[in-house]
Image (cartoon, rainbow, N blue to C red; front, side, top):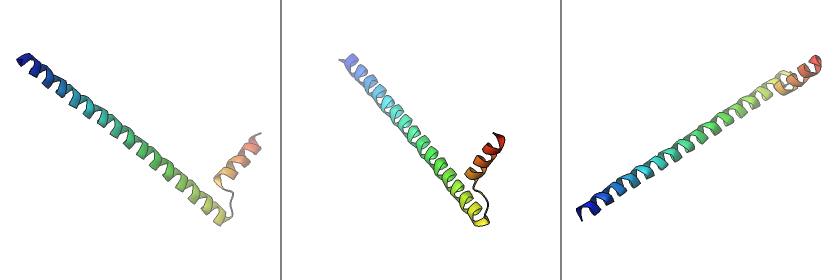
Length: 74
């Protein structure tokens, strides 16, 4: 009887440890995804500001400039 109680306590310890491990991995993945989306939003906003600045100054936008340089090289 004593052995059965000991086995059950080890089973519960492993179960709790595995659940905590799975929750930690899930939280890490969610944090990584959040940071990735934040970087993408920041990059998109930076590109939009660069386009607006170029338009306001009457210069070609960065993407138009890249196309022009590509045509010059070809």
